[in-house]
Amino acid sequence: MRILITNDDGINAPGLQVLTQIATEIAGPGGEVWTVAPAFEQSGVAHCISYTHPMMIAELGPRRFAAEGSPADCVLAAIYDVLDGGKPDLVLSGVNRGNNAGENVLYSGTIGGAMEAALQGVPAIALSQFFGPDNAKLADPFESARVHGAAVVRALLDKGLWTQDDYRIFYNVNFPPLPAAATLGLKVAAQGFRRDTAFSVEPHLSPSGKKFLWIKGGPQHTPTLPGTDAAVNLQGYVSVTPMRADLTAHDLLSDLAVRLA
Image (cartoon, rainbow, N blue to C red):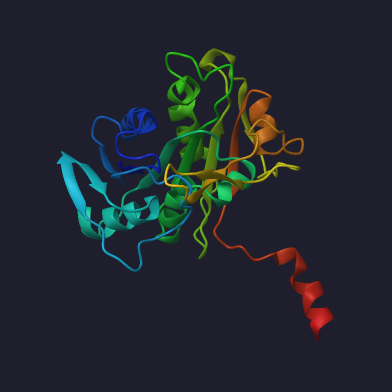
């Protein structure tokens, strides 16, 4: 199996090392793991592509490349340059430092990389490690993802639903904020929404007196509705959420057509 890995935390991020281990186990002795990841951190870029300016790409080692672009850029660079049009069998994006549950999905470059792979017709899985007081200070805060990641990916490859429609299914996986031994198992969960919290901005003054704004995230341990992604993560489970890039509110189409007729 030929696997492409990318992320949004950058080519030197510890989560990418975890993903390399997962991908190598899945690919097997006769397989290949190719890395094309952002040269610098690209957190929060979502499905951004560098449409208006070129990006530099550099080979850092065998099957290992850094691109000055977003995770979606990296997937495009891998397919159409590094692999010269030869698509991989699987794209894995992550392991993100922090959860990509709830509304975080819409901002996540980790999700953006998996989404671009799906749009290119390649099976894709995004993986993220929830952080909290029970794992953030561990010697390996990615322990749950490192220990359980390969089994989750293998389960999705063997038993997951992989559609062939225009907007293909890809998967969003979040590992709970716990040590590996305390991780309870896997649950399929819908994307949730953290109520009464949102991204915002926090102003700061520079030494010269100019105002700068930092984007500020809301509390990450606010539970989503029961049975949805962040809620099951906070209960100790790995969440698996099937996703597609089609943003149409299909449940409203018929009613809206009648209203506007």
